[in-house]
Image (cartoon, rainbow, N blue to C red; front, side, top):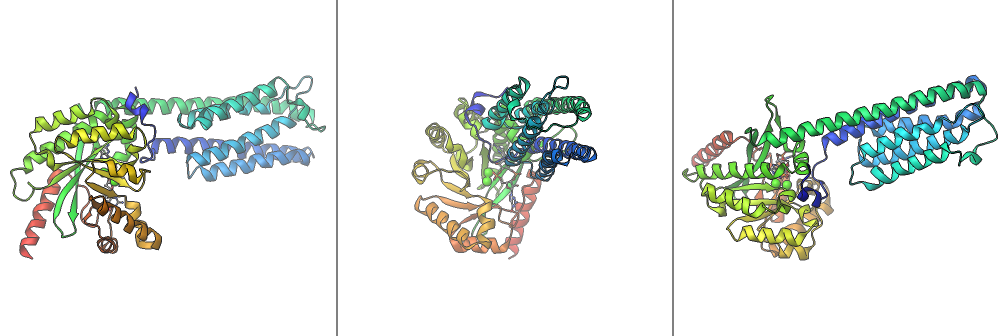
Length: 453
Ligand code: C2E
Ligand code: CA
Ligand code: CA
């Protein structure tokens, strides 16, 4: 059951939902292959009965089919929208020619039904045009054809009667098969989602959430902290990355428990490190989902986890993605301040990907800006991207915040960032995220090698 906070926060831009892409890909392939087969079949039929002029609209159907197959590889909302309109126009074209005569009903318009159902099920409910307006237009057009309101558009020429009789039967069967296939895909999709939601709801209780840690390094080479990154260990043994479950957990509200569990494990780690020489100074950064922040219990539940763990709150840094400020910024800032007053610090994650104004930025209780990896990648190859990165680093200095560049993979990126004044780094160049034991070995080896140097 989606929680209120999840509904309040309406965008999930960070996670390209893999299941949604798969669904779009399947629907586009289905639309493409059926359009190509139907279009070619009818073109061949009309050429065979010497009515080439009637074959033309079906070549349009083939073209839309090819487009759908090509776009199925992108499997994004825009492809879906383009193909849906292409199919709509070609079905309308065919239905116009296919005017009813005394004992042969019109049948081409029946394809508007699977088209309406396919769009309603495949577009996200947030995309109102695709999931609601477009299906309603399909249904209204279907009704207009069904009651003969568009018969006046029919051209003077009509397909041969024997072809019409056969066409009416086959169009009815094929369009109903397509409709049934769309319902089957939808049922399966809902089933998968519900199963994942159920399993996610149990993941924390079953101890399936694992935390990996990725080091954060200062420009002088000293490791200053780690970022805690959630992984989901399935009962099958598979380890799922956050991209495979965070979006779903945000939608279902399970992220509240998962987020607190990551914080709880991070605090446990801090507690263990507090008695070790080489790790007691390390700060742990924990990601906070916008859905968590908007939940009423957020501040007291975070405070309770920290109080229970008896760790120094100054060693906990909470990371909030910049896009979280696009809704209810006032409420979000209030909660950030409430936790800051307990001694925790905040970092603004994926900086540069949201739309927070400089005025908002100034009012945020944020100590660190985490510069999104995309900026780092582009800055190496594009001069204007490099200037932009330089300006972002200047902004962080003016605001009195430190800046951490994410996703640093090469020495060239690192050197460029150092030159531009960046002071903290995180990325595969230093170390990937790793389980706690592996991280402790990595830290020990680093201390060892610095002693030898
Ligand atoms: P993020 O907060 O931007 O985390 C950094 C991501 O970049 C991590 O992916 C990390 O493995 C990856 N990364 C680090 N260095 C490099 C690099 O040099 N190159 C490249 N290509 N990638 C690098 P990961 O662990 O898959 O996490 C993905 C996202 O999932 C995180 O992005 C964060 O938004 C979210 N996430 C992870 N754990 C949690 C959590 O406990 N709670 C919430 N709400 N979100 C989480
Ligand atoms: Ca983060
Ligand atoms: Ca980030």
